[in-house]
Length: 112
Image (cartoon, rainbow, N blue to C red; front, side, top):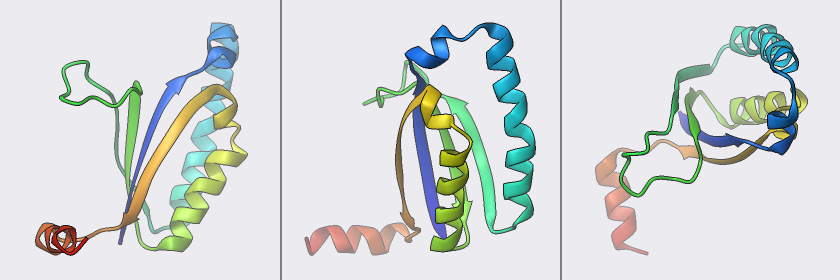
């Protein structure tokens, strides 16, 4: 199992669009997301707005958290995002990798 986190914020291209153009783009994402989910192995755990009160807050306004069954599904997610034109409108960074149990990861930190 892989975990994947996206952090994003609107860029100038998005902010320069009319509300109508933004709505059209957002509407186009629905079928793309449905098609991606239909492949199986990709679960959206949630999307959210990054709270201003978050300690050591990342400098991005929104986030998405996913659980994926394998590296092939990570690649499929990344390809779908790229193909959707998302990066034309949003500055984004990602974090992801195989999920670990906390004790296992803490042990790995000791051996760095």
